[in-house]
Length: 130
Image 1 (cartoon, rainbow, N blue to C red):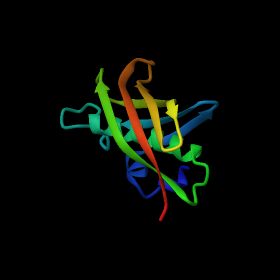
Image 2 (cartoon, rainbow, N blue to C red):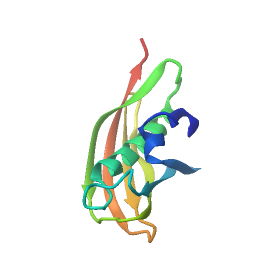
Image 3 (tube, rainbow, N blue to C red):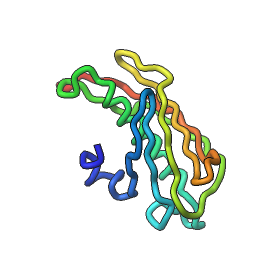
Image 4 (cartoon, rainbow, N blue to C red):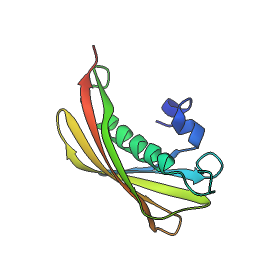
């Protein structure tokens, strides 16, 4: 998965997949000059990129046939709860609904101390390749 994202926003922001388990995935993202907003704290948009990356990867892994299907983000929301100035943030994705044509994911982003930074929900559409 990591090589798949090497030349995308995922690689540019330094997002790394760290763990895949039964019903969850975890990735981390640095909080540094790549992910800061002008006030020197984690940009909310960077948190959304981490959330959508995790949900999209999780959906890809659920596809029946990735050669004839693709998973694309349909809607995402995020509530930013705490600021982070440096270090790493960790996103954990878990399923809410995994259907035939839509997937809904819960993504929780925490700081290095385990404090909740952002909660997000992503809806993914499962489409047939044409």
